[in-house]
Image (cartoon, rainbow, N blue to C red; front, side):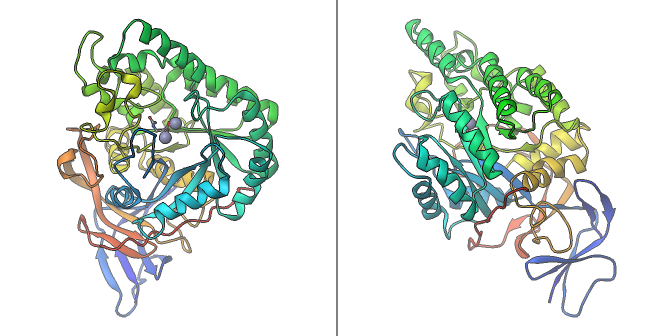
Length: 461
Ligand code: URP
Ligand code: ZN
Ligand code: ZN
């Protein structure tokens, strides 16, 4: 017995056409017409888009940041992903000082095994470089980890120096792996924070002031010079600014191979969220993320970057802390506010509403940036990221006619606010399948047991 989706409009990154889709076991078995077989379950998809399940390239579930732990663990975070139309996430395993990559990966598997509602993979964050780690980069490939992450910010904690970046880039060229970079100059930020402290500038307004666009642009420019010198490709996470994008475009003209991720928050929210300079409101803490929110012209530049194909992927950078009880660790000192905001649940709906419905991008471009490009960039294509015969039946039947408002009151992600509170959303997940298993039916989560699988990612040759 199969499942037959009839009458929908199939959308891939490159095509839009009416066709029926038959799910056979965990794969897409056939696409066309008159595909039904005896005992097939028929699902009416008339008036809906049939799109590949979303792939979120950037989440932080069950992350301990020293002073506290994210509210969403792998169970609640992946459930929220499914509710929002995302069937695969790539989270970060991060090496602690003195730890091997293998140990860090093992710890992440311990946290995630058996509790994920969607499929999942890991990038490996490297914070303590040495010769063994260099060798381990190769070993990670056998574990299905083909991408890494280095931080150019968070001085004294996650930040690595230029020497490490260069060595790691060399290794990534040799191993054909990809390194993701958090691009902000941590030394600049450290100085600006010291200055702010001396002046007793403690409110959330100064979070953005101490992490200026120039710190992002400088890190991006430096990284892309290194990438050129080492002749290897790189991936920039959570790009937030026009200046950063201009630096990327400049490097691309020189032949630098760079993949770029941005996030809905940088496309839709601006730095007014941090409040006025003299205000003592703490609301801005909800938006204390790094890089910080920017200006409207940054948003416009990023949307343009998407429509011109310069931005590869949309990740949520979901990293959830409650406003009450966690964000308020920094009530008297913005530097102590745990960095991060939720968003895994809203990523697809926001891009559909403010990208596709508002006419900024086509539905094919939405599929490309929310799913296909991620699968291609991170070694999962064509298993994931498309609607094609033989691909995993990770399918979202997207009803474009539904209208709702985003609110924390009815969200699945386990956190006491939503950064997009009150935003209108068009469209919703009507039905959803993960490897052929129906998870959402008529807008309701019907699968109660988590059965997400770890995805062994490949090297892109
Ligand atoms: O503020 C953020 N983005 N927190 C998560 C960690 C990171 O830098 O990606
Ligand atoms: Zn980051
Ligand atoms: Zn992040």
